[in-house]
Image (cartoon, helix red, strand yellow):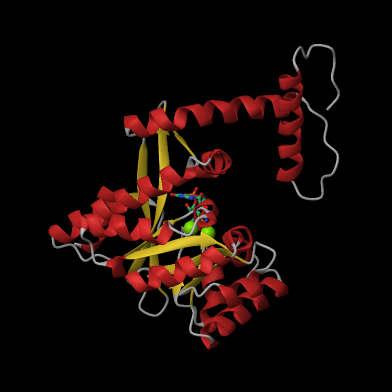
Length: 296
Ligand code: C2E
Ligand code: MG
Ligand code: MG
């Protein structure tokens, strides 16, 4: 960042420096970055989103969608992933945009618990209507695992709604282990004690994948979409998926393959015997009112 004479306060200079620093961290292999118009605009957008989250929660602008997970063997829906959507000013803001911002500000904790509450409410409603309920997974950001009490909080919400715990699963990413360290494994053990299962999301995209598996006693590993995209063209990705299925199965972990879009990918996957499939090929994320009737 080069001060250009228009900056009037040290605070403004520090803010530009820190925004530029964030930008360097955002992209790999980037060591030098100059403050520019793009960074300025991104910062304005981030501030806008950050300040809009709380009012949006109050106004009920967040909605939970459900994407089916299908059994590879029976092709029946055996689970669903809860995915947050933000209906704002007549548009849908993608979680890919606002979740990273909320992770920076800490607001993600509130959002994740909002999703958990909504999921419990839906499950309760479905059970009351006699709809067959599958296990629903909820994404929990790595920020929760900095503390050791997240499992207790999750359990308290489930108890409040009085839903059978086997209907709940918590998804987290492998970076939760790197940053939350010890707490992640103890949190998973506590979740198991309550009867709630745990899965590792986006597996293969972090830096310590295999050692994480040794320390985090998960029930399910979700192999990231980036490997699925390479199933038909990349020998490495093909072998990676194959080996991961074998490794996980040999230690009693089930495997979900994420982001299946084509029948060619499905055909390439067929011999590996994964447990669950998730992707646009099998079903898009849908609002609760469109998801539940799939079981009627
Ligand atoms: P994720 O947890 O890995 O969720 C899967 C994402 O992949 C979802 O995007 C889903 O719509 C998308 N997807 C599923 N199948 C396919 C496919 O076949 N092709 C393609 N191209 N995409 C597919 P979405 O809903 O936009 O969410 C993006 C990410 O935002 C999620 O990745 C998750 O990391 C985060 N996220 C979403 N909801 C929550 C939440 O409630 N809490 C937290 N902490 N993070 C959330
Ligand atoms: Mg997920
Ligand atoms: Mg994922």
